[in-house]
Length: 441
Image (cartoon, rainbow, N blue to C red):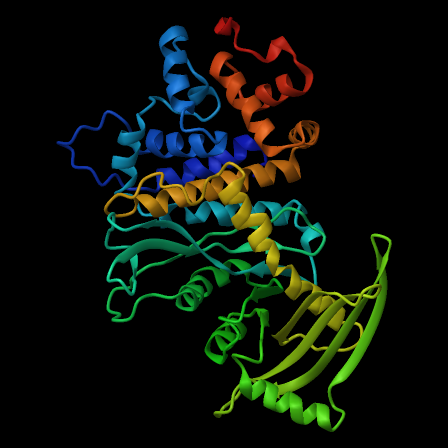
């Protein structure tokens, strides 16, 4: 059977497939008025619509009309309350949802939607950790903790949120997260690099046969992490600064003294000003003093506005990509676009309606992680629709702001009943009454 092309309906199918694999942790004697499916779809719908009040509006619509958009758009049967959703999701591991990210990724790849993201002969995946919950009181076994000088303790949750990025692309494509959380059998508190290694071990097989370059900050540019990246069949471009890599810079000082560090300057006009891109690079230097030492390639970029000499950007990277006059600008641009994981991912999730740092629920087991994962899936689904659905893209362009778009869909679904997601999009684009369910009047 030929795979279905990506659409909102197919994305919901992927989510439902994951839900079907979940085991209900509740005992048969417990009240099970609401299914896991209704709880998961209910939470997802609130993130997708960017409104905690969405389900409340749909319960009201259901009582008046006998049907609601929670059913027609998302396939829910009954509409649980937010506390009921939290109670159910607290017992469900977020990892049960990770397969949805891979299904979406493979579909995007198969249908050619990743072509605009191809760079350096493959794809760039940026790794970066972020905190998504903190409290001085609430805590669970999955919390990390930070003790302050005054003796107070902050409990927090954080995770690595990998995304596919590319220079010149405003969108990023979310991949399955990896949670930074205390590990069984380990005395030390978990850290971002250890979580990144787990992510590699779990998800590298999904990219088999594909050229993937990982991007990361200076936390990642140490030999154990670099070795695991290479062993996973991937490449890397990691930030490498003198303050943290004295051995590398001792070699660079020596090589520069004998003329082995190569230099390249490229002038370019940007926004009516002349700018200078100055590169330095060298191949095959040891990453550390101790043996065996991995050989890496190093480059530095200084981006300057020539009219006043202001440095607009400066950074250094290590990689296993061979560096020459043709490749060093590309490698530096790839390393530089790691910032997209902050600007186009973390910041969008925190400030553009997804409220990443808002405490939607902490729970005692899996709730915080499960809710974060559903929030990421909502963000991913909207990104996919922007890439694959022409009508959706036209509405987003027409509405200009993300906030205005979500205000529109929330207002429409509060008062009008639509037979499907395409019907809602058609109504927003063309204002056709034929897309409404007959009894919505």
